[in-house]
Image (tube, rainbow, N blue to C red):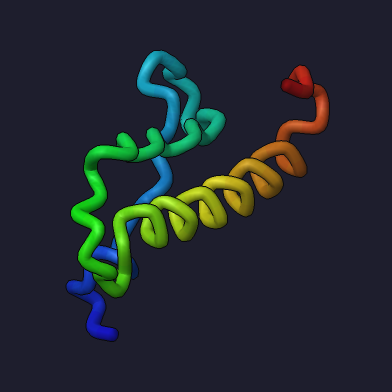
Length: 73
């Protein structure tokens, strides 16, 4: 895969309202069920969302390690 491949360049969103230099990551929005074309695309939009969720969970774990006093949610 090249770096321009969207599945490789997805970034984790952060809270825009948090002015701190290290805001808590925000979970990616799941695609609507109707957004899938049903043609067996590789990767499917749901596969890409799963990859984004993996990155989000990793980023959130790292953020929580840096902010041990933050409220668990």
